[in-house]
Image (cartoon, rainbow, N blue to C red; front, side, top):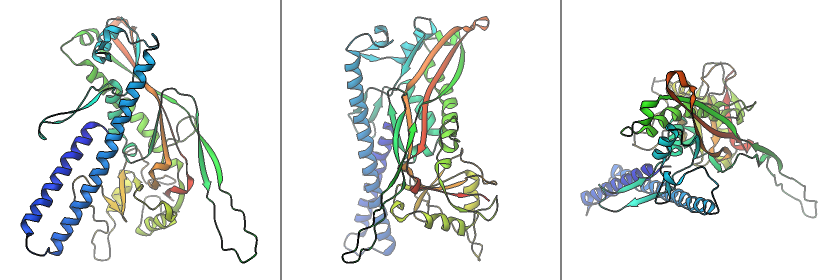
Length: 402
């Protein structure tokens, strides 16, 4: 969650509070009608959700601030990074200056991490908000989040400085208790554990720009190139987060699921199919963290379902900022999930925190003036490392297309 999201949450909360005050003024001295009571309850629920969003966002900002302090302390032990003093302003890295030095060949590479400075500005509500000293990492991660709906759904995200393997315990079978008669032996029931190893698969792209463009100080080249590299990296990583095979690449969400049912045909999804998946999910996982994940094609099939009077069964929510829900659970559409065809996994029902996405290090940016020397082009290479997998088989389910 970035500061702009938190600012919007503050603004949405203020709007909800104003609407409640208007409702109170309108109904002062009289009983609420059923419609007014429903509006009152919905606005209070929205405020509660926004309060939680704001708290989560502020905790994230505090974590980033603590990481920045730790990084500054690390750098104080000696010249352990390649960031030159000329690229620092008040002790912080100026990435536009880093790009100028890349273009001029003064440095050949650097690694970009998340913003080290995030401050809340003072002033009126309309003029106030968050200001962020964004980095290349921030811009590319934003592009990645734009590409991957799954990444924004509440999955567990791990960020590590380096790329060594991480072993995460995985639950395959839970402990089961049973009724015990008087003086009878208590049966043993141990949970079955496995483990998942999260590595650091490398994603990369080359972006070229003319030397004139790189050296033009009046043009914000870092934003432009971050968008180019970010979109490319974002699409490649988002595709594997959704549907990576797990063979010499990350295992995506849909391939980490267990089949909870099979459709009647390769290209159909019926209401009965959806109910089968819903009620196969263990009850303990049916909470706000468990969501539907579908491809656009699967969403189209579900929205097209009609009853005997030709009325659409699924009536999506109309409240701005509130995700559509299917049987009381958020519905997430991700363009990288498979279309509903034979053997594919087009609809999932997953406990989002049971899916882990690991990012290793920052974004490595390197330049070369030799690669396209004849064309007077500067070649930039963007590298980022990631892995993902499920860590609880019980909470990750899907419908398998016949």
